[in-house]
Image (cartoon, rainbow, N blue to C red; front, side, top):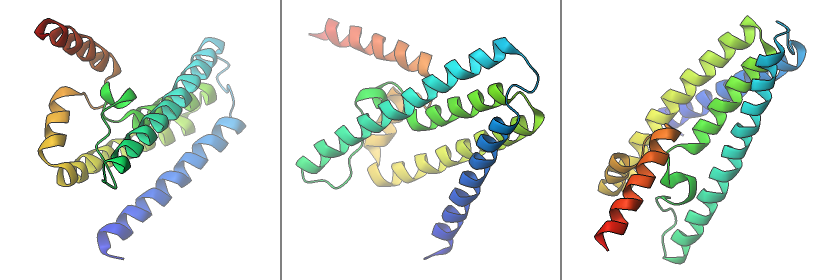
Length: 169
């Protein structure tokens, strides 16, 4: 195992440990500021985060199946949620982290959540570099068409490109 892979593994272990700390602190410190409205926002945000994780997982599986049928081991997934944003799994985790911070309402959760989101952002940048190496110009074109995690911009772009494609027919 080379230094890059070891560093990557250590980063994953650290991230998982921090995620565990956030989950445990949310359970222990549940609604510590007693802000009921923030608690409800947290639970709703948690539901959206889980939905994004499940939806992106389904989109990725369908994309890989199509790639395997065409003889490729791994393919660039551009369908489903990946047609709207490039990193829906990261967005799902970010939503879950925000939700846990809102539910706990404590400074420990806020600090842990902030570090986790920073780590996710760094991981997203690393994944982009790996995908550019792996898929080349196809991924660079994908970057131009699909925003990183901005869901609203992704929906607007998707609607705009759909209208443009319909006009061209």
